[in-house]
Image (cartoon, rainbow, N blue to C red):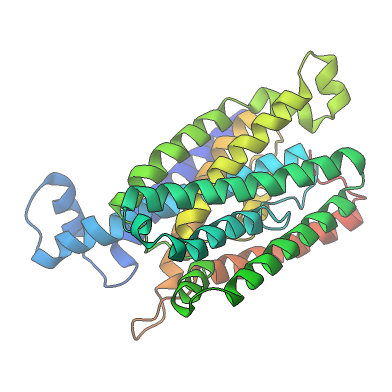
Length: 346
């Protein structure tokens, strides 16, 4: 019965993700008739010639970016909660997003020293991605070293928040010495946006995320063992240090790539894994990882649609919408943890 319910939920998640994807393409901005979307898929002419450009060059890349970013942030949040055995662990709360942001800031604000290189698209994209990955990786290693010495999960969270503050402070110092135009570009990036990603950027983002998601889908056995504790994992022959390093590396790659192009996205990594556990009533990562990928994608697509609801051509920052939706989930988790003496998993 439980397996049947889980299969039903997974089917509904797939359906909702597909519907959200189509809705985002048609509704996020100027409404486009569903018949024109069908015409685009079938290769028939559209009712308005401008719709082809809007769909292919603006809406479709943005929707694909929403899928990749939402899935990436959600699945890395699940991995962090399992690795640290902490229901509030997330790339934003642990300061990993801030580390990626610091890497991007260093790259953007130092690009003025080498203006010729910044004109080469491949160098610009590669530099952004590598800088974000290195920043995220550095913070994750610091948090991991702290977690080895401090077993209290609240203390680990506090250290993560402090590391995030340090990274943000370093960004502020860099801003003081940077050009106003570069500072403005960075501030716009921090709001979080899906619309700035085109096919040129997706040529980098899609393969990186595809590799990262594939590696995550190969990790359920190890994540399930880590969830029960390092002692149990070692007792069944799992090299916990190697697995932890692999999780950290894959998380940094996914977060670095998505953050480089979309900006920081908060709270999705906390809310989605818990939503998947509640809906599917399991802690088995064989089920949770694909469910988290689907729910994360769907949430980002919905947030993108909401960001275009204001009139007069205004677009709300995606990061603000995810915070409004995700913050209540964090509060609920804290209250549940207090009432159940920390037994969030299971």
